[in-house]
Image (tube, rainbow, N blue to C red; front, side):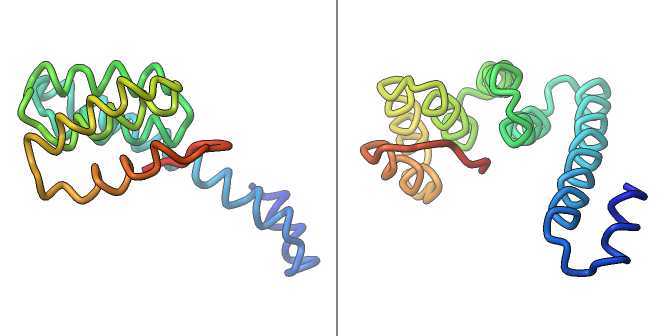
Length: 135
């Protein structure tokens, strides 16, 4: 971090140093958030919001298997959680399981017909994707 700061002080328009500093901050903050979610789940192992949120964080950190494990736990704890079904659909889409993704999005919409996120993400299922983006 200090090296990036020094480089930026010498050249405030050094895009690569700015980019790398932001990424380093992002990773550090993600790791701290992950520890907080771990603690919240340890204190309350049935807190479905913590599993949902930790799953979304793991997607952003490219830990897709960890994200799937967390979201499966959220669904097991609360099968009526429309957001969890939506997140799992997104994970399945990342894994190229389009049929499974569509089924999960449909379940999310069945549970909450006004879940705009499910409609929005599901609308992209038919479009080719070069990569994925975190929620």
